[in-house]
Image (cartoon, one colour):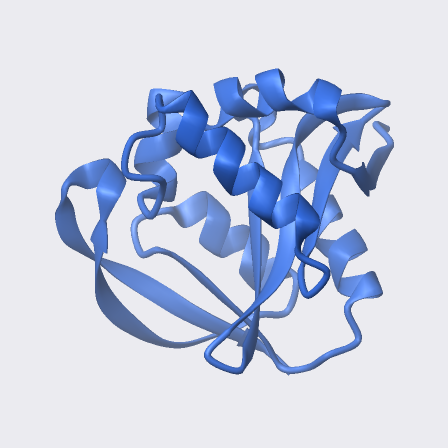
Length: 157
């Protein structure tokens, strides 16, 4: 079985993360993404902010030592939320669930909130397997789809 681990994001990860986070199918599924996923300057500025903010967690996800994505925790309007991005080449292998479990072990604050595009069945499944419960839906503008779409809101107590 593959070993999934979390570590700090390193400078050497940035090219691979940029490629992962601009994969067209991944971007479509995530829906709520950067305005232009191909804008490297905006990506670098965003990642620099994430890495330098002591109030949030932004970690690399590895499988058998190889970078396969990111996972993070942040505060928004007083709520703790989680997020993750897993390379499409390893979808369906349980990596997102393992990475999320590792992040949740490090995060003692509860409740924790999460959001996913309502048609992103894979992500919703990962969150529900981790114990998140659907609490509602919202409509938001999804850059990746250039439209307002429904997103599912979840909570872990």
